[in-house]
Image (tube, rainbow, N blue to C red; front, side):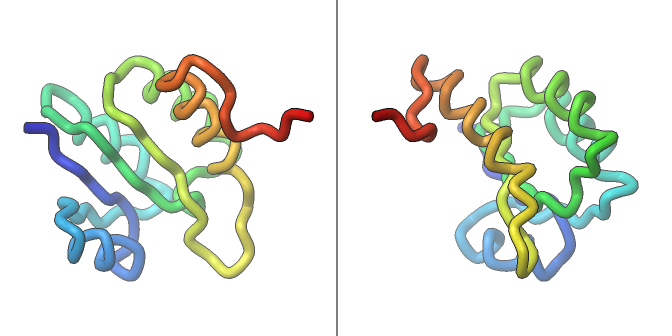
Length: 107
């Protein structure tokens, strides 16, 4: 059975832990290594992490890592002001899963 994992500081992972996610504490400096370690050889279906963990410099490496695994990796806002880093990354995950861009406005 696929597991669900929440990565980030305790204030972020605690609510997900209450919903049955495995809680993994990590900061921005170790985020990619932690994510890579969790995804390696494990049956994980969903990973949720806060966008404060993902620096602009880390986005290309993050995207490569996410494309190489079957798990859905969602980056969600975790601060008072959304950085919108996660929006584009989440849109790409949904588009890959559904085969169509469901989140962009179409008229």
